[in-house]
Image (cartoon, rainbow, N blue to C red; front, side, top):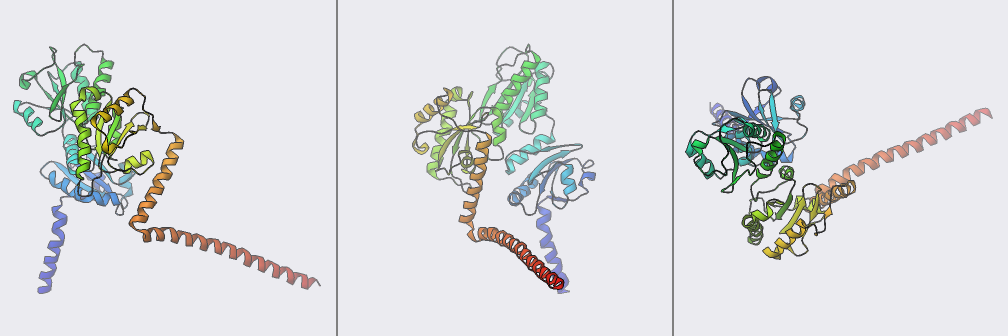
Amino acid sequence: MKGVVGFFVCFVFTWIPIHSSRVLELTDRFPEIRKETGLWLVHFYAPWCGHCKKLEPIWMHVAQALAKTNIKVGKLDAIRFPNVAQEFKTYGTPTIKFIKSDEDHTYTGERTKEAIVDYAMRMAGPPVQEVRQPDSVNRLKSQNQLFFMFVGQREGQLWDTYYFIAKTLQPHSFFYSISKEIHKGEFPNSTNSAIYVHKDGETYWFEGSIDNFVEDYLMSELYKWINVERFSTFPRISAENIKEVMQTEKYLVLAIVDENKVNHIPPDMIEFRNKVETLIRKKRHLYHKHFQFGWMGNADLANSILMDRLELPYLLVLNSTTYHHHIPEDDPAIMTLDAIEDFLQSIINRTAPPYGGNSVHINVVRKFFDLRRNLEDMWKGNPILLMVLFTLPSLFFLLILWACCCSDIMDADENEEEEELLHEKKE
């Protein structure tokens, strides 16, 4: 009896953590059931993938946050079920996809709980959500959420263009609409409709929001404006989102600091980061057209770009169209605001020397640098593992080489013996 009770207790305490995570483990039956079960947010993983293991606790928090919604959160082993992974065009891990009916979309943003939950909530709703209460606008603004708002009747050329762009960029931003009567706020002109973005506590209107635009020109200008404004004034830049940020086709001004695993940044580096952020917030009207500011919590990506190991804090400006970069002549850690302004002005005037680029030669050199840097990091972290990884293949190769050489020698000796026997018989 005690054995049965002990087994039952062990079973319960083993099962509860799995069940409470609210993450569903999917199998090869998923392609059949997903069309009948609504909305899915799925993490395709590999058991040996380090990035997948790092995402696992975050994924559990995502599932908890979405527990009261109609979005089911699951994960699928892409190694065990390769046919399912191939059906969803999952060519690497970790891959996050939002799946509904016959559509699926791959998530390309930051792998944080907040970013992933916002993405899922956007994808679960319509491309443009209609606001029907005046208080809803204030509530949206109080949440410190970046969003776009169409003000006016949901008809006409501007609305059609806005809706089309919202449908395209739904994975990246929130889009809303409201009538002028309900909005009851500032309005930039006397037209029937207008569009603004709310971010960092400020409202910025689309200056070209007039009804008599030529359709193609309106599409081009509005898409370009929304694509630029969908990023906050001073966002965190990472390896996951830098490609998205580079679609602004502006210079990326990156304040690079040293952030540890528990998100702690030394005071001197916080001071440097705040200095760069102050510049764009105070002089947005001067720099917003040319630059997208942001910050990085480690130097890995910057080291790869510069092909060097940087001393932090550092200031790097990356041209998002040519992939060239600019670096200040002075030590970034001691640069004043005036010195940073002079540096940025030299980039605008095209007097600052460009470095790097995206040529074949530069990319090959960068690959070798990354390989050498990774090996150095492995040696510092675990030299024994590195020695094993390199020694075993080398020994295996030498063994094969020795076997081949020995077999040739033995064959040669056998041939000589056969020739001697033949020669004796002839005699």
